[in-house]
Image 1 (cartoon, one colour):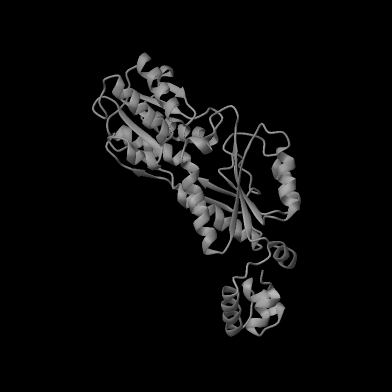
Image 2 (cartoon, helix red, strand yellow):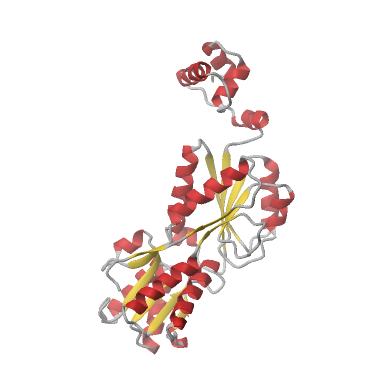
Amino acid sequence: MPTLKDVAKLAGVSVATASLALNGKPVSKNARSAVIECAQKLNYVPNKIGRILSTGRSNTVQLLIINSKKYANLVKEISFFYHMIEGILNYLELHDQSLHYDVRNWEDDGLNRYFEQKVRDKTIDGIIIIPQYMRNYEFLSVLQEYSFPYVILNSCFEDEKIHTVKIDNYFGGKLAAELLLKAGYTRIGIINGPQDHYDALQREKGFLDTLGKKNVAVANEAYVNGDFTIESGYRGAQAIIEHSRPQALFCANDYMAAGAMRCIYEKGFRIPQDIAVIGYDNLDIAQSVYPQLTTVDNRVYDAGMQLTESLLQLISGATDTITCELKPFLREGRTV
């Protein structure tokens, strides 16, 4: 297996210069070109451990999604995270970085020890955290103690010291409500996500606050909690239709909207003539159902890009607290 020394010899430069060239450090243009050409000719693969020792960086970041055992495994059940990971990977590729990906549960023993290990083992330079649920972020003390770069998606805490990228789910809920009100609907049902899921709570609040300003209320029997899966959307619509006859349903994600649509059809109703449906996230399933689902585009891909950009800024030495916010927008289909 060729070594860095072999590359340097073939390129006619010192080992130090070859190392600088391959790690993107300042060297002459001719030296860099020669080193890269010789590395390719020899099929040289850098020793990652050696690079970590010499540069102090692994050029690798971690994505951690934290689920809850109380609910469905959303990483497996819906494509939300696929689109976010696509954004993360595309940004990392532009900057010659790699990704480690992991999924844990809030109920796991030793979750804090997990973060301590990541900080100490030097295999990653920073971490993107998607906590999802309303919990106590005890792990932050470990990251902050070691000044370890991190960014959280949709932190449930308003803390000026927490690095976070937010998708304005309150605004997204507002957009959904405004569309239904504009269409003249007043008997409206909600199929929301888990009652302790931060994004679901924000979507619900934006939706209900906007309805309330027009003196439109959602009856207790027209509100149910699902878990973001198709089946929970089906069961939610079934429960609402059995106890009330809504003109429209707001579903807090597209998968639950797809399940609700199946139930509506099975009950003999038409969409949107009898019951309108609006979803949330604009995932692949929104284009797969018939008629095409009206939904709120939550800019999931963009969020992945922004999370990664923010983390790399921190890894490069940025000291100011990262706070970014993305605004969703409506993607009109034919279900409202």
